Image (cartoon, rainbow, N blue to C red; front, side, top):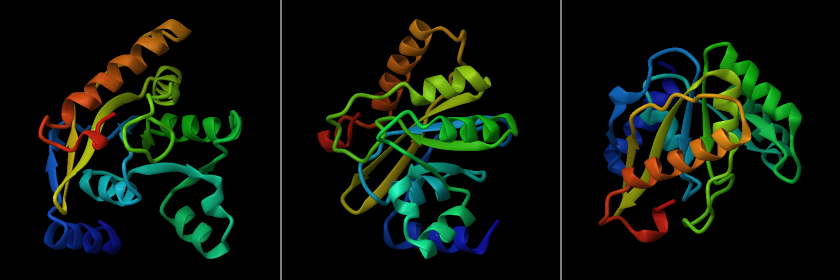
Length: 189
């Protein structure tokens, strides 16, 4: 395990109260999409150290405009996506990585928000096209403590648009169900 992950994980557990639930639901290998809500800028590193394998993320292309940050992100296996248009290159890159048996993290609403946006079809689309397993994942805070909960895996079926929409709806409900009722409503999907 890379030293940076150990350091960040230790910091988050000791000082930010990181609690991980349902880790047994995450496959240790094979094409996997970790589909998560996104409520703060802490979410990528928190989910990334909570999981039991390397997790690669798509990130908005604007983060790659500064050379030093771009180098760090690429070193962490993050790849850019243009959120202003259908970025075919980012989709192909995600599919290539999934077909190589890697794990991709996707924030299903496409951007950081406080629960007001519905899930987009990106995770379902990639799962259908790659036969990757979907892991519904929720992140929330209780006080200063971060919680990450990994739900039961979902297997995509079919490649039609209606199936993709149904899978997105089911995924969204599964993520929402992982956030406990007592958590702040703004942290829901």
